[in-house]
Image (cartoon, rainbow, N blue to C red; front, side):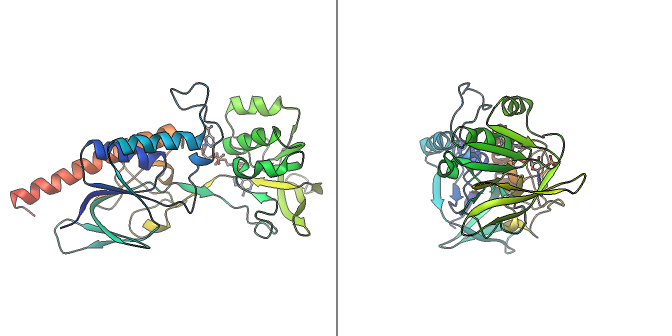
Length: 318
Ligand code: NAP
């Protein structure tokens, strides 16, 4: 039967690391990646906290290095969008069917490494002006705002990095955060506070994005005294966190209240043969380095699981 030992879904740091490990273990493996939603790591202009690159490395460049590493071990990689995952019940152990737009692949185990995507603010004008001034990625769209006025919404690492990146191009950057304290790492906060082009508006929320054909203003409200004001701007960069890409496994494995996949320390999910790694799983720290660590563990665990099935099969106990 043409059944893979493991199928990895997702081609970010977690999935590619799992790919290196499963192919080095000589498992019959396939990695399915989709370009429809670019992974978070791809969009980082300069990654400064990945060990071994003290000068920093561009996200796209790092992912390319991961891919080259996978190719060294001849990992089979296809670019298809996974539509569904189901289980066949004809054997004592599950055989997972992964349906893409083009094929149905079968596997003894699956590693979910589908990452996350940008959270939306959900305010009027956000959808209407998407790509007409509203963006979720400064590295992708920043150049359009050379010498223009932009606002960045959010207070985490991503918002800080977006603001710092935009300050190199734009005329002015206003970072709007809903609380009185940023969540971003201290080193990023220090850079924000010392950058003359960046102004930070604390305790403020954006209530609407307005304009005629493109963004012209944002309406903001102070959360303490409810006073409202208007900030003229050409661009709005929304950077308020992530939502996991876990729709595919909803109902198949246990998710937490925010839809992150619940795993144990071996990256095992609630379903036999399904492992999860990287940003799509519940965990305390979402970094490239922790995604890679998850990927290695998921590959190791899937390997042990497949080995157990195969030896039971040969011993005739399944
Ligand atoms: P995050 O750490 O979850 O921060 C999201 C920010 O957006 C928070 O400041 C939050 O406010 C704010 N926010 C959330 N919902 C909002 C809403 N509806 N309206 C207004 N503001 C809202 O997300 P992130 O910055 O995208 O980072 C995601 C993960 O990637 C984190 O684990 C982060 O450490 C990691 N990351 C790391 C690096 C790096 O190490 N260089 C770079 C980028 C990302 P509150 O603070 O009030 O909750």
